[in-house]
Image (cartoon, rainbow, N blue to C red; front, side):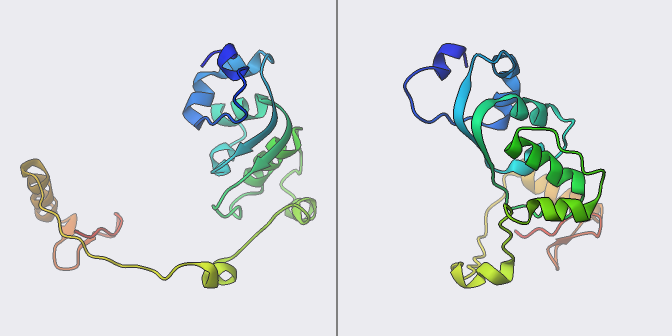
Length: 165
């Protein structure tokens, strides 16, 4: 992407996080500015020190929104990074969750599964059987031999995730 691409008359620009980091110099130059920047899957910037977070914060904009479906309950620093993007300034809460809770109480929309379950379509479970290719079949059978996969339960051993086939 080049600067002229961003200054055309297209009212909306959509970029993924990988293209943002690739075009870091373009945003750091300050030549490009937006009315609003919206980060979907904003948990991608939860690590304040990551390149993705740094580049996202460098985008010149008048307003910012962050959207995430991922719970922000793990570490206060994860939420602080999202707030720093939204407020366009450094925020220092010194890991004080009480201060952080107060700071976000008016701007955080937190919806639990119980709150939205009646808005969700019914869960659909569909078993689909696929024929494995020769290489896939060989790996599958080797996983059984190695004890990684138990065909009867269709579960990987305890150090792996559940799979179905």
